[in-house]
Length: 291
Ligand SMILES: [Zn+2]
Image 1 (cartoon, rainbow, N blue to C red):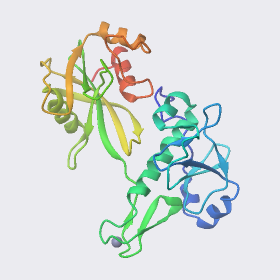
Image 2: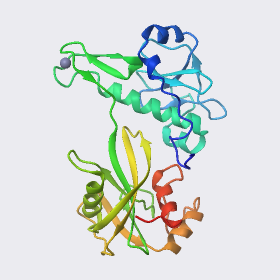
Image 3: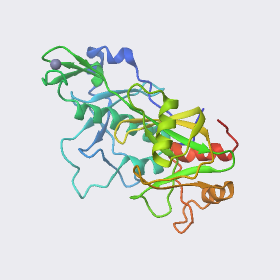
Image 4: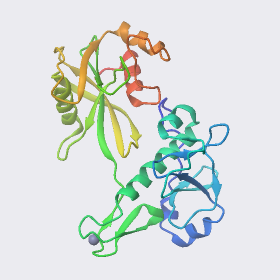
């Protein structure tokens, strides 16, 4: 099923058997494609706004996987920033403007390269990690401990009282932009418990039940957004105790109007971009999904 938000459609086949075969991987490097990021996670683009792709892969590149036609793809990161005169884009812009294949590949590359960059040393003995399995495993050169790339689970939830939808906004956002509530899952907590806690912390609204709908990788830098719909008591939202500047209930008519007023910066309510699972969850609630 193709879902209408970014980073999930047309993924590469991750080819675990190839990852575990260093000789075959090395043989691919001279002709394979490499997707380059700079130190800030940006990508150089051509005149059409598409990524500049080169053949030939450095030894330290991460193996991303293969296309359905068997084409191998790697990703690598420059130590510095791209020169200022080079046209470049970031993942948020790419999500809006690139075809699904490229946006999904970029998201995968950004996530795994960020993990490598921020996990260069063993957390137990501080010796350097040596990356194996195409870059998807870090073996400690000192104590032998093995590290794997991780994703940080976060719940994102369309909360309804049966009639209205609860949305919140952070102070740094564009004027009148509201979104579904979200937060990281804590150790020892279920997803359902995280939803109850986060919605309470951010709005003082009591969630009664929730149901999982879909997920979205969110490599800013390493989250996995787990999308739910939840039914809550019709409590009066209160903010101020957490990072939200405001949270309030919106009527079906208000949400419907915001969905069609997309590009209008003067609209009374502005939602997250259509590339986000937040926007999709709001659409699911409008379409009649219930917890
Ligand atoms: Zn170690």
